[in-house]
View (tube, rainbow, N blue to C red):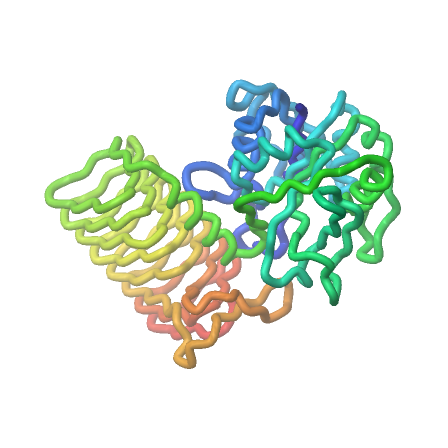
Length: 393
């Protein structure tokens, strides 16, 4: 089984975290998002990976190389992001036999992907509470007979979970016309396969589309929660590590630190002294968490720094972000409503009662800065000492 993994997108809804990092390479626990997709495919039995790359393609190539987890890897280039159908079409020359298609910004549970591979032609389905936000499958028994995008009156509660197994013949059906959105949609290819073949719906146990910053938090909550405790780095003095905590080789946890898992402290990071890390928190490679800092349920990408006496809750800090001493992140609205964030110019609900800030590459705060819930600091943005920031910058 060949697995075609779509990893070419820029991830505009993830900005500013994708300022220099392609969305599939954003960190989820100890590896990039797309690596979890690749791992699920390999565990399910894929004997070749074809990664479709585009934005910041070299990052993906460097991570995977010519072989990943014992499986050969090829790369197809999508020069322009013209839709998912176009992306799979860019891999056409490598397709030889039945093939799977997986999205590199989705998380799947591996056993369900194994079921999908065994049932082909097949499409993954996930039961959702509000199907009107998804492509919804219509079934006759277990056979898929139709797919409708975001219907007002959904025929089922089964959303298209963006994982497929198709017969080799479908390789010749990838040239689909543009949709009303101006993209070549892979669901149009699925519709043709449904017409020509008996396509099985395989209900997956767990699935997540990681498209916006707060969903990256949720993805880390999922994968950090699956880790097993491991202490390979240096833990000094009376540091107290509770529950599922991983300290990688080359990381240092100073005296007086308390870490309540699930938490991952990656190689090159140092924490403390007297810091408090809790919730599902990722401290990335070469990060510094200083004296008296509290981190809760947050993601710090490589090289981010929270040096002194700060609180950071339910937040995402991009590469090399630096928070000045005493920076305080507010993560709860006084009216208890869900926190909202601006995504592509539109103010939307995150669906989270507790949600802090998103800071892009190299953003910096002055000492004693206060940041309101849902604030976004663009790459390179700065605040002045003592400033209260209530709007995106």
